[in-house]
Image (spheres, rainbow, N blue to C red):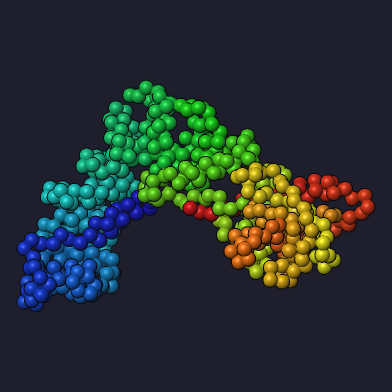
Length: 565
């Protein structure tokens, strides 16, 4: 129920944060305003207070603004009293005091200022500075309705909708579906968009009024024509099901679902995904279906049914198709309106959506799913998934060593690990290989093997922690294993020399210059976590290189690091 209380309180803040309109016949210069104010002219005192609030011709000074508002309000200036209430409510230029805020709003309201009447009604409705009293709240809204000006109409419409929600929940007083309907209808008739879609829902469900499908559709269409995502989603349901008053039209249902989905209505996003998956109202398209399901489940509509459908679509498409769908999800999100403030309820801002930030590689080093990778692949991720031999798994970070660019993550399951060998015996020119997932959107999602030699026993600028390697690597290889001929991990690939930087510095392009962190700097981190790693595999004369590559490839995983957008 607290969800509804946020609405009137936010409206109250919006209302009272607005400066009261300046009075007519104001003096033309700051000097004359000040002179009149010092002589006790209430209108000039109010004008001077406004100038100190916004810094108009004077240095901004909220404390002085309060002083002049007080002077004017005590002389009966209703606009100054309203602004003084605003200052007490927000703590601008004076200590916050809701009781004092209510007092000055009521003074201004009793003097006939409509915005203050609305503020008083909201205070009674929400318990700001005064005890909740629904009857008093209604009384002040009725007074405001009788005297409302065009400038105050929108604030009154918001307040009426807020009162409708107060009666809907019964918070602090009696719950009354009938009164909730009454005030919702008043708000809707004056043009307030959320009230129009809610009124359509009330007519549809018989909530506080006799069911009226025709009236429901009329109000939903009215709200949808102005772009309300809640109404658009509800109309999508009605066209899909062919309810009373509407002929079933799956194409129109998809149209309305998409309109709502593009504004952040998560329930509509899931329905768009479902219709694409089933080919209802649109050609069947699993890529588009999964793209929409990704958005819906990463938002506020992550029900078991939507998650199950997303997982089934991923399985049907395979890793390559799933990544294409991820890219499509990003494109769709980028096309959504930037001022989107709607969820499936239309009441609060949509939850942050997780989008693929980067991809990398990793290697299983224990049977229970412990994975070595590069720290820079996962360090800024809000969510990590790994593509293993057993399918897609969620992973968590166990430990990160930023200085050595190493991370240990873990997923659930039983896997075939690769041993870690000591880097102490590695020699210059020794044959090595690596397996990883470079540039997955271009090169695909199958593992890629590259081989080369240890080019130097030290890394960039003779860093002793690193090897320089001639193994060709690309973005996405980071975190992959560097293996000896026996298939043992002797390091983790972390970077390559930047060819553009080298070209600018030397006039030449560096080729096949990569770096890997040595295992001697990795094992202390593994030991501190108590990870049981398998015994080292020693190459023999009968060792088949292709067999080693095949074995390692089964233990290398693709890492997908997501961040919130």
